[in-house]
Structure formats: C-alpha cells, structure tokens
Length: 171
Image 1 (spheres, rainbow, N blue to C red):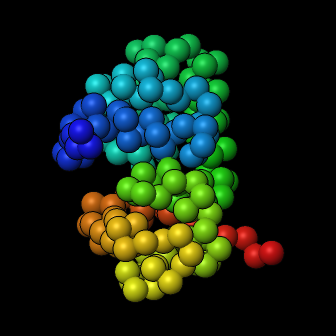
Image 2 (cartoon, rainbow, N blue to C red):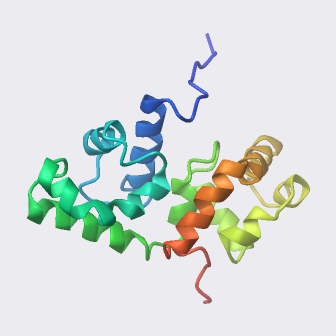
C-alpha cells in the first residue's frame, strides 16, 4: 500500500540517467538542451558517470560532433554554452540539483538562508539542522549522510574546481 521500491545502486545506468537528468532540469541547474534522452545517450557512451562529468563535456567537443551525439556543431556548441552558463547559478539551485533525499527547492532555499555556503552546510550536524524551521530529523539525517559520503565529497570538490557557485552572494 505505501511501500516505495527504488534502486539504491548509484552506478545503475537507469539511476544515473535519472540523477543527471534531475541535475540538469529546469528547477535545478536549468541546462537547456540536456534532457533525459541526451543524458541517457551520454551515459551509454560513457561520457557521464556522475553529474560533475557534465562540466568536462567541452573537452570532448570535437568527438561529440564527430559522433553526432548532441548534433552538429551548432547544437553541440549551444548545449556546451548552456552548461557553461549554469556555473553561475545560485548555490540554492546547486543544492537542489544534488538530489539529496527530502531536499527540494524550498528546503534548499531555507537551508541557504542559514548557511553562507554549501561548504558551511556540509559541516552542519543533525542537531544544527533540526534547529532550522521545516527541517526534521529525517531530512537532517539525509543531509548529513549525503555530505559524509566520500563519493559525494569527490563530486562536490570537482564541481567547486569547475567554478560552480558554492557561496551565497552577500545582500
């Protein structure tokens, strides 16, 4: 009646396609042209193994054009420009895009009102998080678990190295 069944293997191609598609979606990083069909093809061709790999696609521009995966030169350049533009999105969008269980757009906005950066949020404990309005124990645990995962740490470091905004702008 109320049981949800979900794959817990983050390396599963279907799970990977869904995770990356969510990352690129309009409510997250809003990367125009990089929809589920194209993401699925890039996963199958082994260009994407996690969402940080999106920011490496420009290194494969000529190869992508040659294989026609994204399209001809014009389409490929449009998608690569949209990827580059997404780097300037707010940390709220990035936090939403990370796909942390129970952290959607409104929760991400609330969290970023209390933390200056994603790196600062990363250091928060469950006790710190439950002090924030609308953050319960389950959500707090999911956030702490996400940031304590070594693989997620590697991805966050890569995203930071690629120049994605991790800090809120001062008002």
